[in-house]
Image (cartoon, rainbow, N blue to C red):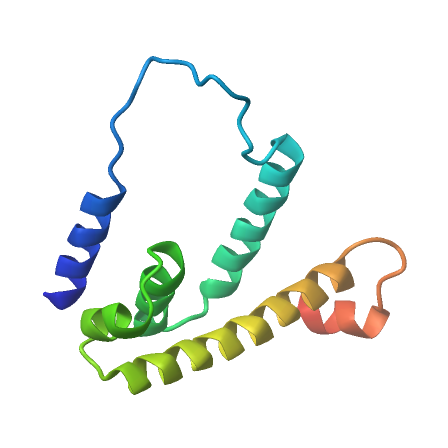
Length: 124
């Protein structure tokens, strides 16, 4: 219930009204190259998150995609602020290891310069 309530409040805060007016100044937003790099990173993170537990995926969603931290995250998870911080630190460590393993696996499968031993392990 707390998680759903937190998500509802976040959605309400982020709603924007559409407008047909053009801005007076050029946008400072990221260009196509930056957006492509962000999309690639988002795909890597999503793939690395595939091995997370349901709870860790929920924490990832609340902490990174919805921007909850500190007391807000603790309230959404139903734990103390110290516990929420510890959960986030463990999640960061897990994601760092997962992303590292994913990148090593991709490099091991790519190109003619790949390591034969790593390729054999990954094939299994």
